Length: 165
Image (cartoon, rainbow, N blue to C red; front, side, top):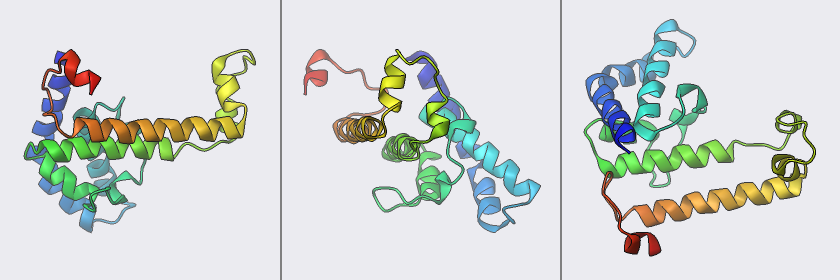
């Protein structure tokens, strides 16, 4: 938990120090320019710290173009997160988790993840219907967790009673 909080704080600090200049580049520079690529990479690195993503490479390239559930743009949420806005951070976590799973497609690439026909992974991804059902259950769980977490502050210690709700 302490490591996660350190990473979150690093993400907020990095965003607060740099987001204004990154955002200007992302809004005005040619998307094929080195300047744009560097700003995008730096933004995604900070976002990975902020949300606990494995790393920036696991964030979909088009994530910044997405409209959040609340109607805000991802860049607007990031601007708020740079100021330490907990609801914006929570919403960014939600949107990134949902986007990551929404982007999963049943394909030969997914089937190539394993060649052990007896594994549970093969049983799930080996059948396109089971794959979609599993994906939809995961998306519903993400929605449920977001709804449940919206009444708690980030970093707040939860009691057994809180988890039972």
